Length: 329
Image (cartoon, rainbow, N blue to C red; front, top):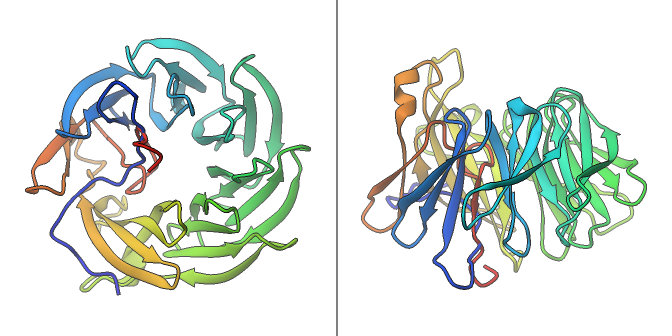
């Protein structure tokens, strides 16, 4: 049973520079910018333009480059995370949605929703290495800890595609529930978690054997909320593999656009859902005036902090927040 908690917080990834406080980078899809937060005070410290419809966001292992999918520009923009200046761009293919870096920091694997491709880009030479045909509407991307396997989820085909990083060929396809979004490996590379937004599940896939196999599906229960209204999207696993965190959004009732009424962050043990935290409210797409400000809430005192128009939390609803990692956490 997923239990609501009073504490509110964003669901994010963390990174810390050696001589500065932790930073949170939030891509604002409708504001066409990135908001930077101080994760100690939860105050906005900067906002900078990031191209048209910025979505996926990640940072290089050395913390020197911040990558942003500018989906409507058909490019990946690369920024200095200290000065927030644009350094250069990378080719991405059409409509880059989400991406993942290899553990070494190179190459970058990009999901191209419009052309049903995963584009592989060398971030040093800024050249396209390969274009891998995948299922319809590719979305999520993950790379195994040993860098040998790339996972892509295709929203319409309802599959997790296993791509050999050496040959760029699909070697396995695993059918999951409707509209898969995020894929997440455990640190030991033995399990893969795939969220299915419409299916309302997270598939647990054993990847330790020669043939990947779904061993179970995690479902969610919230008092007063119909199961079909819960839509798991973002997934992150702890380094010890004991828990995963799942951002589940909740559509507005009776809304034909399927807007988000709220987002819930679930802490899941290997055996199932342990507890949940209400993580914030979504913004109705048909009320443009509401895009001026969005608030998430921090755990201490329930105070809000604003981010830009259409801001997304990495686990909560769409995978567009990057926090600077703090001491490997």
